[in-house]
Image 1 (cartoon, rainbow, N blue to C red):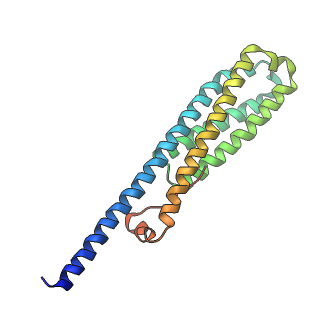
Image 2 (cartoon, rainbow, N blue to C red; image 1 turned 45 degrees about the vertical axis):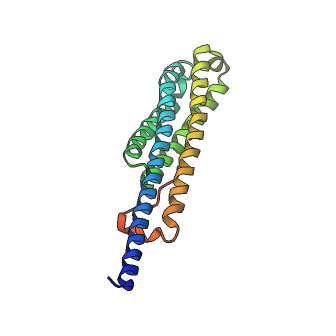
Length: 181
């Protein structure tokens, strides 16, 4: 073999090793997003566990506000559905956008529900309601932290697929930009 052929073979080997390394890095970053979603999913599960008894406990103090309770139940169901979709492919930006929309709807209906509860002083002072409300708020705090971790993982992944020369591989291996929540 001539020195020119050896040089071309060496360059080809370097390129192949770089491609394998870049691919493995992107897969690792994509897996980090899935791990971060697992933390979000856990926080959602905790909030759902707090929501069911809370809404049952609020039926009596907020008897005149069944619309607010029903809106919160519907929003919880939509968040659960969107989280199920997100759980299957947490990197898909459209799934993240759908979950974020559902979460915003739940936040609005829950805010209204808690405002109504504060307005009805007797309902807010009930020990069971207070305990379930505290559990909800703790789960919400955990969710906020988990969302931050998810968004950081998605940001690192998005930066990696946008950087040169890795972005040359994005189409070849069908990597897509991750959504943020």
